[in-house]
Length: 127
Image (tube, helix red, strand yellow):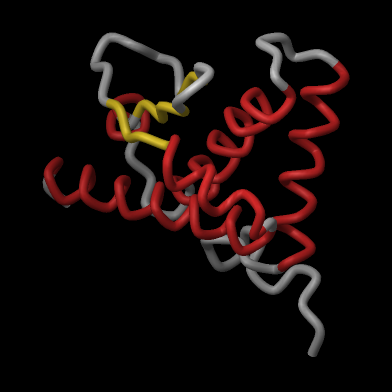
C-alpha cells in the first residue's frame, strides 16, 4: 500500500481500538472519545504518551514498520497502556498502573471484541 493509504488505515485502526475499549468497558467511551488523539512525531520512537487531558498515539513508528495484521492489536495495547496511565493517575509503571492495564486488557479479551481475527476475536465469546 502507498504510505498515505497505510496512514489512513492506521487512523482507522486507532478508531477501532477506541471502539474496542469502549465496548469492553462502556464507562470509558466518552473519556476515550474526548482524549485520544492521533499524533505523528517522525523523530519519535515512542508509541504514545498521556497527559492529564490527552492521550496521544504516535503513528509514525507504526508507519515505518507497517504491518496491516499486527497494527490493530498494537494500537489496542498502546491505547490500553496510555489509558491505564490516565486512569491510575500516575506516571509510573507501578502496581496501580499495572493492575489498571491488566484490567483493561482482560476486559477487551473477555468481551471478545478484539480488533483483528486471531488476536482477541472470539476469545471469551459464548457460542
